[in-house]
Length: 395
Ligand SMILES: *Cc1c(COP(=O)(O)O)cnc(C)c1O
Image 1 (cartoon, rainbow, N blue to C red):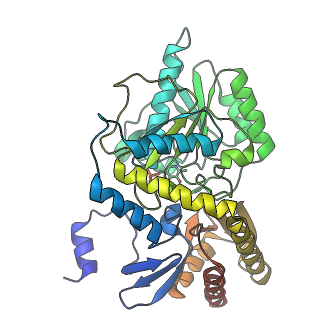
Image 2 (image 1 turned 45 degrees about the vertical axis):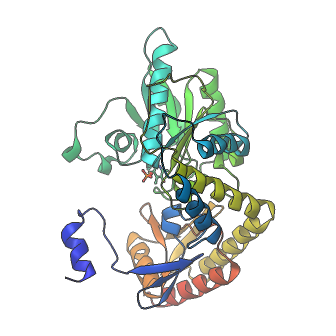
Image 3 (image 1 turned 45 degrees about the horizontal axis):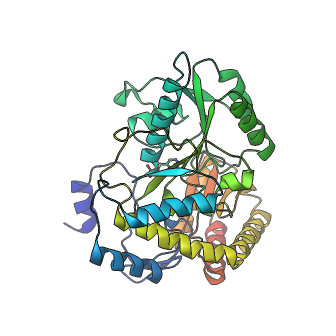
């Protein structure tokens, strides 16, 4: 059997895979088994924030695992404590953090925090959480239910937990709130739902409304967090103060880690929540290094320059290919091109792959760009040259 056959026979079928075999990567460039290079505008769906094959990250991980990889949360874990301190400092919020292994798990924990808050603080229990249509919060049974996409609530996996309701947009959240509502959970830019940022004044108004009523605001920054928006958190860009923020994707630079940051620092007692792997030496030491690298990238002005250059390139595409695209959306290094149809969206991704530039889909008709934050000018220019060649092959 060749590798593709082995994969198809032995890996449980859940992904529509491309059968390319990447062997190594350098920053935003990947090399396959035939040494063909690809420009990566996906960073493993917003994960490889510091690029592929990052030497500093590799050294930090290797130094750590030569000493201790894991010892369990029954003992102090130095890099975990230091990472939690750093997240509080970088975010500008006085928060305590719980570490998980993924975004879905972080959101599960956020739901638990909200439920406990709703149980202990009011005369009658509050437990309902309002989320937004077109959102994405994960693949566990609870986070699938929290996800505001009907197509994901398949009867195959029912019954789902109660307590979730969906608003079409920010305006509709208000009419969904009742006496049992404990929280509103949303992404500031819906990563899977079209890369369209919510309007800042609307989000700020909602945040204020919720605070006045002691309803929690949970911001899912699994995709937008860790400088993806250009700021440490999209929350910082929106100048709001949520009660709970969840993180994952870019936090570990490819090492699985999720986080729940909350201002409700005393919500849990020992035993209320936990994780075997969460926050171990491997993932938290990797994250500390990732934050180091990205802090430098931001403070040196390089990240802001990269964002401006990337945006210019997208604008050029819109201008030249107004037969295929309507406009450009998103912020930071989380961008989208609105294709005129879902057929065009699919064809763009397909043709781009043939020209060896990787892009993603989002929503019904958007082509999504999530390059490593460390992507350099040469890689951006080469990627857009290839994208242009791909687009010239369409229609
Ligand atoms: C990817 C994503 C998740 C799920 O994260 P996993 O690590 O795949 O569980 C949750 N919320 C948002 C906004 C995401 O982009």
